[in-house]
Image (tube, rainbow, N blue to C red; front, side, top):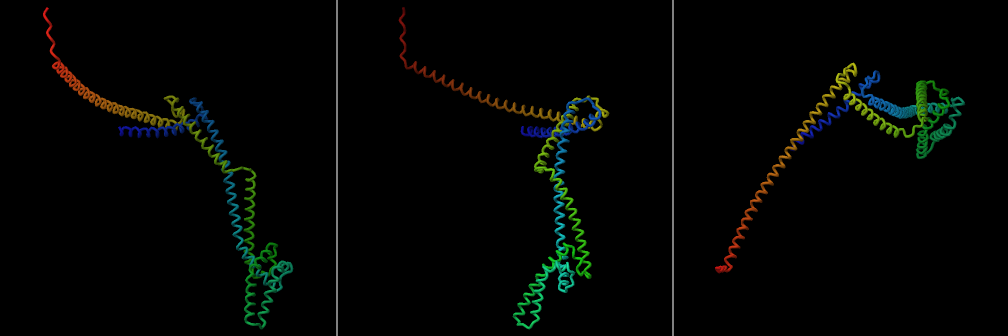
Length: 361
């Protein structure tokens, strides 16, 4: 019986798979014939076709809404990512720019000390260079004077400290000169590659800022659309889309099944097309196989019932044999009790006095 039950379960799984295949085949048949029905009505399962059309329209609406939200989010993410990339590129330029600023500042420092700067450039450099250059000049003069070793050591340390702070001043001066466009007024006769590099950096930075402005403008326009909680709305829209897809697939399957069951036996490719006719042949094979499997299951179930009934008969035969044995035992007990009774009666008779004979009349 266990083997039969296993066979039944296996065949039931086969039937379930065939039903799943049929569901898809019906849907494919419905979709295929719907294309023809839209151009030239064939006159079958029209109500199911109307239902399919409605579900397809709902699906298209749901898909459009989802794609709009997805496109909006994608644009926001793309713009945001691009803005970050451009800002990172702009920050990357800061390192070579600082280097150039420092070099320009060093040139200005030398020219300032030599008093060859034009007046408007000197005005920019005075607040930065005047006091540091004076201190360095004073310290240098003191070191040249005859002084003790300890004092000279202290002065050298102070001079070293002053010169160590110069790179920061050079960068500051260079930046300010570039910001007001005075770098070209420095004595740059031997520093043309430096100016070329600065020009290229400026050009690249201008391009990046222009590109950044374009993306920031586009981002502002997207943000003006005021889509609240777009990710949450996209998740909800995706759920609606999936439900619409499922409903449309179900409608296609129902329509296809209705077509299969109502189309005439002489249906041909001119009516429903070659693809649909091939699908109907596949459906027929699956339905036949399901019917065969159902018959096999019924036969197996009958065999299981037969085995169950035979087992019950065997049990009842055993019960009947047991009852017969019990009857035989009871009959023997009855005979023994009856014999005992007769013995007791005979004993009673032997114990009582004999009855007197009655007198003759």
